Length: 400
Image (cartoon, rainbow, N blue to C red; front, side):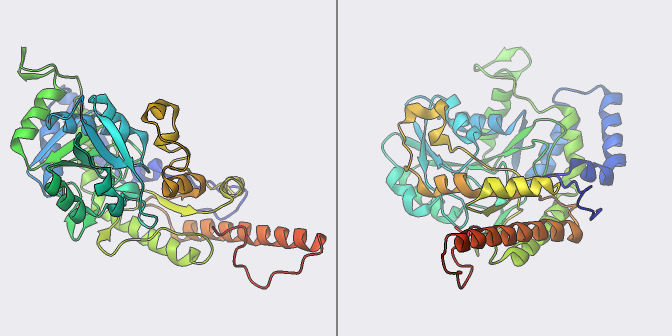
């Protein structure tokens, strides 16, 4: 990458760089589908479902049109709906809650662990009541939730567990793939995901053949066979073209995830002591869908990096419980302190397989420049007001 700061352009995710590596394969897959004119639930969908099921170490996979649909239909397949509550993490994208609401059930939020950003196990059981029917743990930013205690609690209370694996394609928990840990799991193939389509797409995986059959009926107008409708279903099918393109990408996913893990390790080493960096639990092998740091002056840092041509993101600036759409849940500011602290301080740095060592050094160097400039400015302000010079950087503007 060009290291001239004036011409530097480093996106949060570089899909063009990814495409340049696989363009010939993508073009061949596209031509295959167009030539066959096999566009709706075609052969490529079935092949991709089989391949993705094996990848996730399960027997069944059902392709749908989005991650939101995957979560919603998975819950519906377990008869979750009006009169039920479903527990999930407060720190997640709103689609997790929307999937629950769309079934008629009510989402019940639980705060997250400050190290992994996933559901805080210590708070889980107290959120269960007589209406609770399911738990949706979120593998946030590509890091697995602590699934063994979640499954133990679920078994104790007779609850269904649907993993929200929409950011965690290929992540592992104690050596097992996410998606194989709960009763079912939902994946999203939005273009920006580790495994992304050329548009929207999703998948539900499970070991339960009966649930998979219900999902296939629900996604396709409620029909078991053409024009024979056994339930009131939906049009939530994965397009054949998207399935063909995802098959190409799936073959590269492990190597892409390996590169992300190397980048995350480099970020962690280079930024140690400068900002709050994310940590990987001992049980986890994260795929680092996002690399998030925490800084108390996020807006200023993001603006500084933008001037350097470095894109950043905020995932997510307003928690679900403070969104107008969910004001009826009755939560108030302060209800989930860890989640709210994340919303105020988290900043996502560029993360994709094609990052180079020079790219990483440029991002880190720019952050270090900002910290140094901010510390100097703070010192000048202290001196101007007749305050003694601080003896260390502890508590300076860049730390929480």
